[in-house]
Structures are given as structure tokens and as C-alpha cells.
Length: 176
Image (cartoon, rainbow, N blue to C red; front, side, top):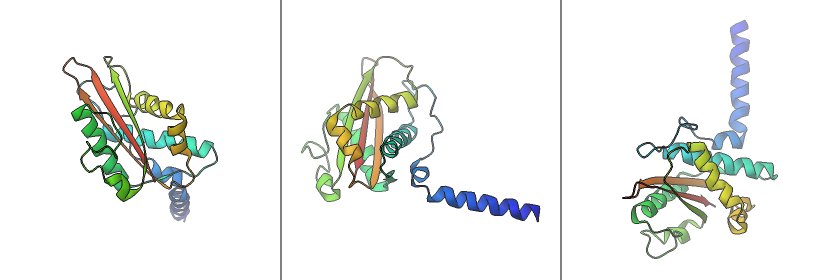
């Protein structure tokens, strides 16, 4: 009987957690506090932290957390990788970007960020926090984050080393 009660309590608490949209938007973050190096950059962890920070900010401002959208995740990651590879920093609707018509097709707002550093001390968290912090200081980017019409979120990130040994990190946040 005692085991049955414990199982029921666990089922109820898991059910309550799954109804919490903020909890549902947080992805795995196995390397949250690990140092980023020239050979170690976990994009999934950075993307998850970006989503967590954006949703925490929305909730702190009385808005609903956004749900992760797999299409926006794919588009964000592809665009971050394209920017890092080509070293062209631009929004997705730019005609130089492959699939630049995806912006109209999926109708999303986009925040992008580029960060170049020679230092290898940043953790995945501090790097994601710097990107989100910069967006929060910009009125246009902040508007995208706090837009009431948005229900979904996707984040992408990519790191590429320059020939001079500098890390070039690119971040993309898409909301619809």
C-alpha cells in the first residue's frame, strides 16, 4: 500500500510538471557550466539555455513561456551554421542566404547575434547569457522576445574557429 501511494504521488507530480509550459520548453543541458574551447562547443546545450533564459524573461514579465518548435530549431541551427561558415552576418530574409524564403513561408521574427572572442574561458551558460542579454538591451530584439502573438520558439548556435584562432559564435533566435 505504501508503494502504491508513492507511485501515485510521483504520477501526480509528474503530471503537474508536464502541464507547466516553462518546464516543457527546457531541453537537456548536459554541459551547462562546462568551459567552451576551440574543440568543445555543445550547440544543443547553448540552444537550450537560450530558450530557458528567454522564457524566464517572458514569465518574469507576465507572459507565457514559448513552446519549442522543431521547424524553428532546424531553421535556426541551419542559419547559425551558414553564418559561421560563410562569415556573413545577416537575417534569414537576406537573398544571399540559402532558403531565404523560409522567413515568409513560416512567418517568424528573428534575433541574431555574433560573438567573436580569443578567450577560451566562457561556459555554455555565460555565452548564452551574453547573447540573450544583448537582445534584451536592444528595443527591437526585446520587442520580438516580448511579443504577445508569439507562441513558439527555436534557437540555433554554431561555433567556427577563424584562421587566427578566434572563436566565432553565431546565435539565432526565431519566434512565431
